[in-house]
Amino acid sequence: MTSKNKTIDSNVAGLYIAREESLKILPDNPVWHGIEVNSYSDMGGSTTLLQRETINPSRQNQKGKIVDLDANAGFTLDFTKNILTYLMQGFMFADAREKFTTKPLDGVQNKVISIETDSYNLELANTTPLIKDTLILVSGCNKYQNNGLKRVLDATAKKITVNSALVEDVSVNDNAKITAVGFKFQAGECSIVANNGGYPSLVTTKTNLRDLNLTLGEWIFLGGDISNSSFSNNMGWARITAISDHSLTFDDTDFKPTDETNKNVELHIFFGTVIKNEDQQELIKKRSYCIERTLGDDGNGLQAQYVTGAVANEIKFNLSTANYITCDLSYVACSSLTKKGGERLSGVRLAEDKSEAYNTSSNIYRQKLSVIDNASSTPKALFAYVTDSNLSISNGVTGIKALGILGSFDVSVGNFNVTGSLTAFFSSVEAIEAIRSNADIGFSTILASNNAGAIFDIPLLALSGGIPNVEKDQKITIPLEKTGAQNKHGYTMMYQSFEYLPDIAMPMTND
Image (cartoon, rainbow, N blue to C red; front, side, top):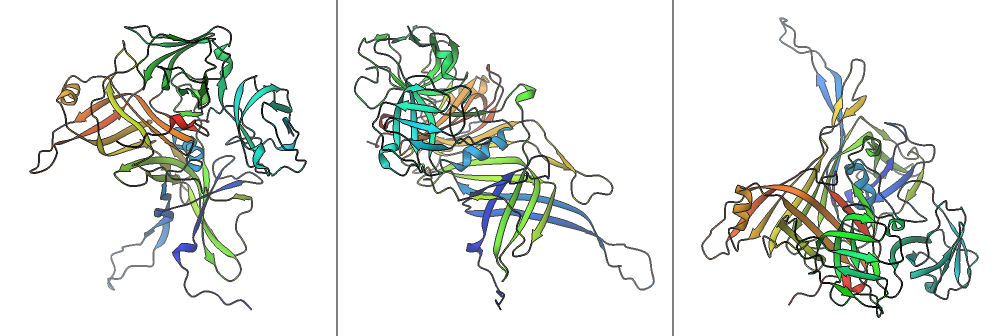
């Protein structure tokens, strides 16, 4: 006989989240994503007890009844490469705009069933095969030679032929994954037109840029690590503001654009997954989740508590000096329940995301706050250094109550609000003047580490606050409040994740 524990350590608790098919209803075989949590602010259902308070000689109240339940989930985690991209779809109320991948965040997974000496064979046919010269990242294969960055030479619905020598494998690991991460242009077909007094463009003579499945507002990285894969002067990050068959126009770059053509350059560009709050009704998706917290073994197996019908309400990104970037997440749910050992909800449980966490010392490539300049892609930054920063998304989710229902039968959502604050080292009065004039401001944070990256971008916001802090023996600082607004392309905030970036896209070591 197994003896029951008298106490249970908090360290044995685990957290899993699964997307529901409809509010409070899981699919037949749900996929549970494991999450490494730093701490919990809330998890479960809080009940309301109502007692009768009658006028009676004994002056005693009667035993009350449970009349309401508020279910919530709240926790803090480190910002890591993988799990946050999956979770951000809920907070942005939108599907991720993914490039080609055999393992999409949602939807049908396509297995790599075998590997030949020059190609990967897929189980399912792709309706839109990869185009030639797409750069793909392959991971999870048994043989190390079959992993890494490859270039597509040819692709059919179920076969991808690459430029690298591969090792044959007829029993490919289920974790094998292929993702499009970039593109290589033909020698000499690309040029940069600086367009002084306006926005610069990348111009091609052969490749139709619409075939790359890029999005207005999306960031790409220009340049690669191998010889002749970069321009000499135009290398780095660029944000797309216009797309035509043979040109990409950029309204924000981290390099000073200059006219450049080189017949030997086989330009590499790198792109990622895009998640933005959508403005078209058919693209706005209200996801609901079931969140499970395991609470240790009760002698019969793992016991667990659940919140169901959980909708993403608020997420806050915290950046402070010499620390990991952390995220505070909160969900408003409809109900809660518990399960004894051996009675956990069924499904496929994926391992916790063990990818590296981003830190604020060596993983910030750029954080820029500037007044928007319609005649330049390189407006001057208002500050050189920031001491702390945070960014919040709020969806205004509240539970809806009804007669005969304990808990909520549905949730309502408010406006999509993006706010934040930062404290910067003061150097000039330009920020104060920008506040007073209600200037159009742009803010972006670019993170990169171990050949991967992420971007938070608020293309249009207003500033408030701005009273300098002057203390004895200290540098003058200035606190600012940020409030995002819908920009010219119809969104307030864009989040991007990059499964692969070249070495030259990694942050430079501080001088």
